[in-house]
Image (tube, rainbow, N blue to C red; front, side):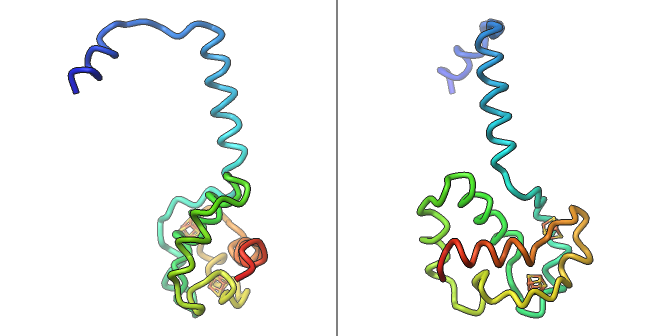
Length: 117
Ligand code: SF4
Ligand code: SF4
């Protein structure tokens, strides 16, 4: 805590070069976040499969962001088969209520293919 306070008590602005690098990194991160799910959960009660859509989409974003990292497959290996992205029926009931107009069915199909599970 004291170290954090020491770090920030000095009002030292970023240099133009540092700002440029920071903005480039932020831009890269935003572009890699595939879907803008806000985890509002409006869709969840509309899924006939009872999928935890916001959590699956968070894993999907993570998986895309890390270009196929191990976290999503590891976490999903503990899920029962009927709760995996591959259990999505493509019915699009969730999409009808999503304020972000996310194409959940397409994301689930793509995620299932990427995971191979
Ligand atoms: S499209 Fe898939 S995730 Fe969406 S409600 Fe239908 S089964 Fe659930
Ligand atoms: S309704 Fe859309 S934004 Fe909200 S949790 Fe579901 S997919 Fe995410």
